[in-house]
Length: 196
Image (cartoon, rainbow, N blue to C red; front, side, top):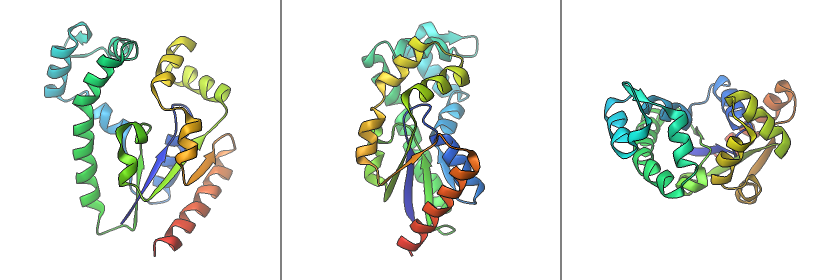
């Protein structure tokens, strides 16, 4: 089985590409989805509350407060990542084992591919890309954040220009969905031929 990463900075369209791939019948490990699940885990909530007391909110975590803390202080971000990344790695391993016999290509939808060092596990890297202004508008609308919040989030990620230099292929996502789907079908056909 070959591992294919779908990555790109926030708002660049990687999740849209991942959804297309999944609808085409391929397994996709959605890192953001697993992180969302983690915030319902009582042990994780307890650990976050111990390390970031200001974010405790009833029985859960106030994610906006947590985001403000970690995106304003890199040492706090590293502390949170040290809690989250091992969990994600274990989930990825389990998912790969589950799909190992049934598929030739396994996709990973992961924004922080290079930052987490997961690129070393991948056979092929696809980077979603879009103009900065489109990226910013998408995130502000989708996540209901200010331009300042977008900049904080974007600034902690590796620049998309750098990701593009490390990619095997770049897919522009500023096109109609049907054209994006057709492009992904062609890319996957090429991958299947290459990995036969």
